[in-house]
Amino acid sequence: MELQDHRIIVDMEYFTQQLLSLFTNIKQYPTPAVKECFKLRESPKLDVTGQKTFHTIVAKLLYLAKQARPDILTATSFLCTRVKEPTKNDQQKLLRVIGYLEATKHYRYTISPSKPLGFLAYVHAAFATHEDSKSHSEVAIFIAGVLVYTASKKQACVTKSPIESELVILTDYIGLDELFEEFISFILNDKLPTTIFLQDSTSVVTLVTQGSGVTRTRHLRNRMHLAKEAVDEDRLIIKHCKANLMIADGFTKPLKGSEFQQLCSSLDIYHSSQ
Image (cartoon, rainbow, N blue to C red; front, side, top):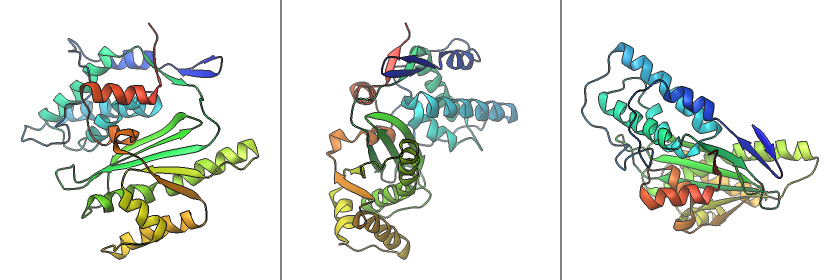
């Protein structure tokens, strides 16, 4: 980690190089995943040695993604769901991530506050993207304009509509955000502005701010009231965000070309060591 004027640079290039040294003849790729990354295809399973190697590499990728390379988080989160019985097709998807890291191994994570101190959370879900019809969630939390936390994962329950999947991701991270806010407030010995949650579904915004709408199960009704209570008690503010400005969208599905480059630019966290 390197400390410079008004910014901190987290350099995991050595770790990345050590990971890449486990492979030979690496083909470089401009993105970490193909558009059909979440799709499962019939393919032979890896042998026992291959399965153990696959699991080890995915664990290393997850560590790297959570520490300094969130650009590989979406692809890595899918690979995490395949560690029990990986196939040759899964191995090809793993090699795609490795190829992308080979092309971008000099990238470093830059922390540079650019806004007043406060929490801003982007939450989004891609509906029924997995083969078992479960949705994929993503949250990106910023403090003072700095990305401090990201999560990209498969939802634990099957939802009936995009609105329900968005409600699940929103309520999943209310508690985590409150812990973040409490910790920072304790460190600074000062109360922070109320956290703002950005959501691109106007229906969900209405659901948790006005309590209108019908939920099909007690489980989802409880989630709706959980979020509404937090809004009513001024523990969070929820606002609508246009779909093209929803940063979390890039972590719920694989992006390609200009869309992926736009995601990296919007995060504004990469700086090449070369």
